Image (cartoon, rainbow, N blue to C red; front, side, top):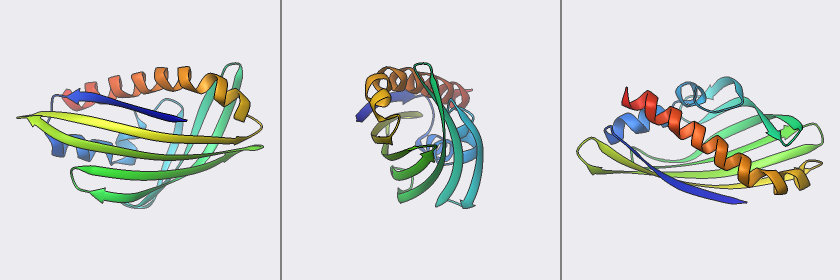
Length: 147
């Protein structure tokens, strides 16, 4: 499943970059994130994420790696995780550009693959759930960065 979107943030590009590449900061806005452990700064971290797909709640233990960092313009990450009887792989890209002084445009793309027992549920519920969760996530990101 592929998802993408854009958001405008009233802040300098460097400020947006620092927030979005700091696992502890960004996890405060990520719905369902229970904990974050930085394994290698600016390279790898682990997190537990809980997701509800309809009436089914699943918790994934995720290993996340930054596979490309072009400070402060573009970042690419890969996440792999497991839940009982299921697995998820995510590849995400964010591109930042300062469209005017202190105004940054963030474009993001994500390719999500769910395998195992919850795959059929994910295909049915993920588009709506993802849209809702991404809306909550970016509302939080904008409010924290702009304050």
